[in-house]
Image (cartoon, rainbow, N blue to C red; front, side):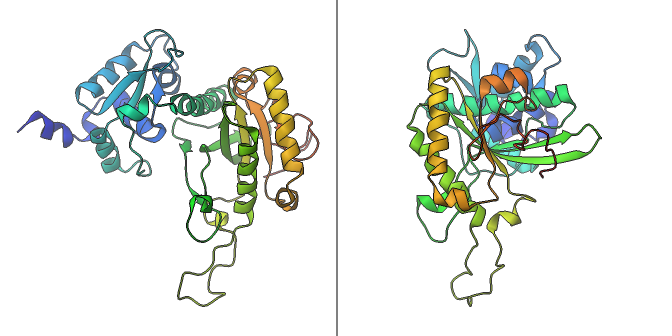
Length: 317
């Protein structure tokens, strides 16, 4: 039997445990730096020696591949890892994560989207690190990138809303209650005009009120008659905009502009389900999600935490 065929049929259970854990993570998050994998999978070790050994094994088996940062910003010699089609087949056969049509290629791994993809992972890493510190729950697979959400009937690019990630975080309160929180995460590196973020806000407001029409051939009124998001989420997710690598002056301008766009949007003003706020990756890393690091996009700009409830009010779902 050829080595290629043997590798293609290799069960994931035949790999060392750390290698097994790395595969679905790379499948779901598409492109992950060595330092990010270290924080997610082996945070208890000072150096990722064993992790690199396991990644090397996966690469030898042609289940993963690696490239370098296109601008050399991730640190000297650090590699960026992604799953191969063969590795994706192994993960999908295991059935532990939702199957995705997207496939990372060597060309896509070095494209201009590289920095944005890594910034989304950095955001998830910050949540998982602080969850460990705070006794909360948010693991390496608790955020999913680019999940499509229909916001209107019909076809066209504007019929779908695609957040940068949907992140789930379980917070344990001081009285030992557990709160299951879901976030739409938008990561902004200030590479495009803030008006694009304004359009995204409008799309979130549309999704909050979107009620699907009955399929063709079905009589009017035969649908569920309720908002589409209720079939996916127990409560409408909060929206968290995370600015990454933005100077203080540029940050102030972008937050002010985004709040002004939101205040001028009639659909947003009418939407009571959408709770949205802005923070930075730097603040999230330094102070954690329960620090007063979030500026609400709608209403008074008084800083709050990721719960996005007014200071002193922790009753919001």
